[in-house]
Length: 323
Image (tube, rainbow, N blue to C red):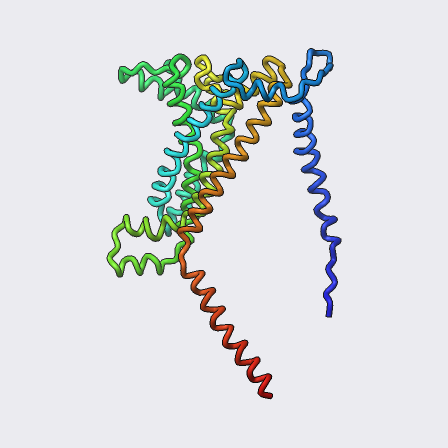
């Protein structure tokens, strides 16, 4: 009996495709159109081909030098953020309680920084780090350290990194905590019976079970840190000088400040491709690592099931022939 497949359910998905096309595809095609043209005002555009892309990817040109400087700042910032927030988030998740009334309290406290809007976070740290009225800036200056994030590139970078760690470490911690909660108690009981040390428990039980959530945490934090805009823009405006001018800030300055739509469109497309390519590399590497560390028991169980099923089919065939 042939089962009839009803394809009318695809009609329910068409509105979603329409919304995606309107909100993503059409603006993307507009940016692509701007990236191959030049404008001299009065809504007059002239064909430029791949000229903007050639200038953007040429480090010797003014646009290329500006682009690569901002790109290295972004990569450095993302690397610092991942090196700090991932181990710190794992440590916080391991120290959180597993049961009792304190679980809900800790989860609420950890989620509070994530509920604050990005522009409010930048404003909070802008006031917090000021040397005249800010608690942080005043305390550091009283210790004899010359701290001024509006004049010192090192102070500006330190403030932005600490601000991002304060804002987003909770996300990594909550994801790792979810992975830890999914570990059955039988694993810990077996470890206690074997006399395993805390480090052995973490290395052989907890870390492998957190590998998938860590993949999600690394991908999310890389994308967020690489696309950061609001917090450093509110805090430093890209300064002092160009010390904290990341790609997103430089792109806005180029598009809205100088109104170079062609250059800004080309930079935004390359920016987007870099994010997609880097995320794909991150995912591929970590997925391969996860596959290499996957227990061989699953494959052996599958082989055993296949081997057990084969004699069963053989016996059925032999019985049928005998009959």
